[in-house]
Amino acid sequence: MRICKKMFAIATISAVFVPGLGVAADFYKDKVVTAILGAGPGGGYDLYARTVMKHLVNHIPGKPQFIMQFMPGAGGQKAAQYFYNVAGKDGTKVAKLSNMLPAFQVLRSGVKFDVRKLNYIGRAASMQYVTMVWHSTGVKSLEDAQKAKKPIIFGSSGKSQSNYIVPAVMANLLGLNVKVIAGYDGTAAINKALEQGEVTGRAGAWSSWISAGRRLLNEKKIVAIAQSGLEKATNIKNGYGQPTPLLLDLAKNDEERAILKLLAADAAIGRNFSVPPGTPASRVKQLCRAFDATMKDPDFLDEAKKRKLIVEPKTCEWLQETATAVVNTPAPLVQKAKALLGWK
Amino acid sequence: MLKTMIKSVSALLVLSFLATTGARLGVAGPLELVIGTGGTSSAAFIAGNGISIASVLHAKGIKIYNYGTKGDKDNIKRLTKKKRAINLALVSTKGIAKASEKEKKGMSGLLALGNDKGDTILLVVRNKAPKGVSKQDYNKAIAEVVRLLKDARAAKVIRAEWKALSVSSGDAAFKAAGLRRHKAAM
Image 1 (cartoon, rainbow over the protein chains, first blue to last red):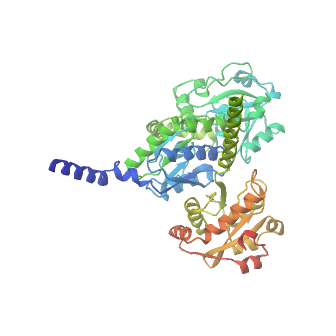
Image 2 (cartoon, chains in turn blue, orange; image 1 turned 90 degrees about the vertical axis):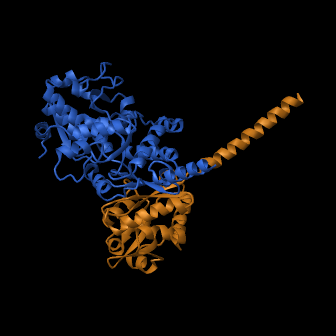
């Protein structure tokens, strides 16, 4: 009996004081988790974040409620800096930050965050970028684009966006006849410019093409010629029905490959979720496993299917490793990548 | 024959019950409203956080999400333009005074929420209902926002984020700015 009492006492003390046991489990009860977004409402970021958060909270012990907080600006850096430096570190702040952050950290100056210290909790999908050209250009493949005499004019929303980086790489590293017009007010504006003949190409996330750009795809108004990322998606075909090449595979040497890898890592980082540095390790672990469970949840998968959201999950451990590898790119390669993009 | 009829009638009854229950369940999801506030260090943004948290804890049928905008001018633009829409905004009296007549027609005043640096922070609402939401449901949601902000439990939650909360009608401020007050706030 005495032994039983002692064991009960030890168990109670452990549950109260050992992180990851009782306290962590009860922490989220009656709490509100804030999902911070480096974008405005209504776009792909919002759609992914709301759908994931709606189901994620059901897998967190204590089943907290959630709210969204929109913080667009500076290509997602405004939200990242707030999240990293100001947001509470108790595990009630989750962010869906820009997939460009690891690349920004090494390529841009004045960055006030270190993605190596962020606590990633998982990735819902990659953001494979697909380069599309307007059908009337006659370009049906990357080979056609390489031979094209008339430049393909790409629309871009800003120099720090992937819709600028991908064509810039195609022009400056792979030698394609490409020009970029930056300053469009988002994806919808570039798509409109495509239809009006103002531009003849756009590099965009595959998930965006099959949702917002579905009509253009169905009407065969656009042709895929290349994809950017770390892994090749086999289902993206060019105008001849052949799989589109991965820009990374076109590198002529190790140095080019390393630069392309740095500039394409954002596709792999994808639709990522994280909690701020300093969040208790037990809660981070709890959120990582809740995220993994969400990605397998039939209700989540059903809703994602209905909303035409691609689900390609990766664990927090994989994400942390990938982001750290980007930040640890050797300095000489970083300098070359900067020069390639025309960034100071 | 009788057995078949009874079975058919029972099946119809079950189906009609399920159909009506399903319809009721279908509208059960909260209406998500977005409130435009300001920069991340502004009083409006901090107040917006409080309102957002209070909405999930103490409001019925609505959820309010905080949108960190560039401030008054940006809020008014987003509240009254067709695209980039927000549904609610926190704007200072100085900010409202700078709105054009056309912009004033697109929004209505709800309440005054408190003071910041000698200026009153006003809660204003977009007149146009969001896409897919009836005018009636939108008005109900606005009435719930007003009820929430007058609720003592919600006030406690908001004050934990923004101490200066002091809800009043803001009648004089809205009148001075030439902005109509929304029916739900009367």
